[in-house]
Length: 236
Image (tube, rainbow, N blue to C red; front, side, top):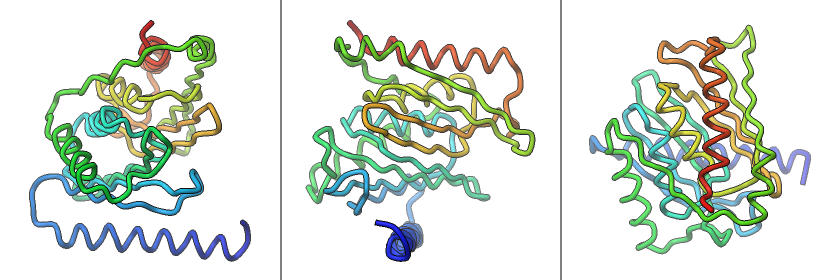
């Protein structure tokens, strides 16, 4: 679908999301994380997808621990938007599907399980949750050779862009998030795209001072660690 109809549907979806987030935050009076979950219509899947919105105070390892929680829950992440407000709160939105490719739905037990797992991981403090290990298949062994990690610095931007292009596999974001956190790298935003059997993930990152990463030794370290982690996380 293209043209005005698609534009209107997109605007309607964005407006609904804005209202959903705003009302949730306005009605939230707890100090802990706010977690909202709803199914949405999504081009990723004819049956739709599930959107998880997290509102909480910014902290180290937040992204790494969120993605580790989704991995432990066997939820596949198909989209992620990361935003930090001026009052140091994170407004993170993840689009996820169950391992069978379907949205979570309205199963109250499953919804509570997701919320509890996220709260547990978000309250982990300065501890980075370890990604889960999966058994490597022959197909994954072959495709492990085609992992690309690219680092881009543009003069007009005060952040660096990290691009990870690799075969789709569980826990990619959890692995990348763990490495960024362990190297004291801040994540400003993330764009996740799954294209068939491959993913093209963009991470917009800075150092602890909020500046783009220009130290070549650190750039090479991040590239090497991410590639090695993605290759070795699937155990034989």
